[in-house]
Picture 1: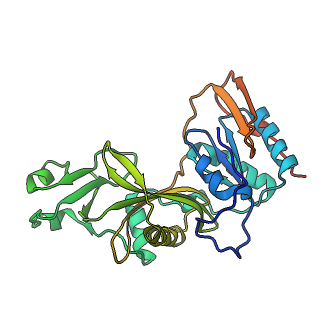
Picture 2 (picture 1 turned 120 degrees about the horizontal axis):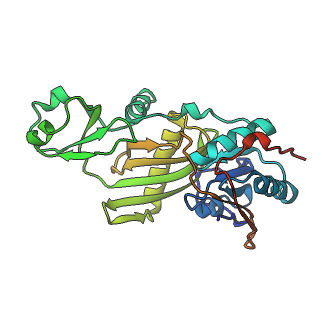
Picture 3 (picture 1 turned 120 degrees about the vertical axis):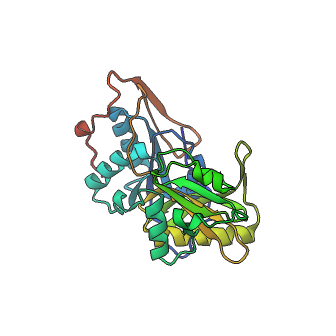
Length: 296
């Protein structure tokens, strides 16, 4: 369940003179998006829906009655993408195509270079044959769905890799890694939060230094604009170098995934009093063809 707040926003990179669009945020409830509503305040309404169209229609009607018509419909995870597309078409609202998201690590790197962004340098397998490994190398599968990121510290490590595997090689960079989680709308960041990655099993800690926040947020904004990320959630990883942050990776949910849950629920509220409705659906698939919504 998630709600938004009417508290004013001051920490996000949007000028006070900028007219903020009214955002309908859609979430399947897989992740907690309370933080985004707290940042966006009165500019957003969040609907968390896992699939039942009658409940969804009621939630939309409540939103329309209490808040009005949104300017943008923004999916926050992959499960919400089909519904967001349907609502945009119904309401006649614009949005960057989902296909504008980079599909894999190679495309992310290619587009970052084409946009003039500072990003990690890729090495090919042939060049590594003469590498002395005093500087380690990171091997990553091109496809994000494939596991197996490895840190190579010797030629033997390289020899152990499958020679036919589609892998990218990155030179190891000695710098803190910052994770920027945010929401993009119209090619800019409307809400974000920043963490330093501590390490496997150790979690992450918030970036609290204001100078570092400004530097890293500006770098993330350049990535959002340079890669033309679609409206929705994003995850950007940056090396926090003293002179200029360097892009490590960017991930945008773009492929709808199957929702296996049979318990369907819908929540829509901007107040502390949260309204919930729930049913047990006989079929876990959402019958979008039966859905209708007309804005007042």
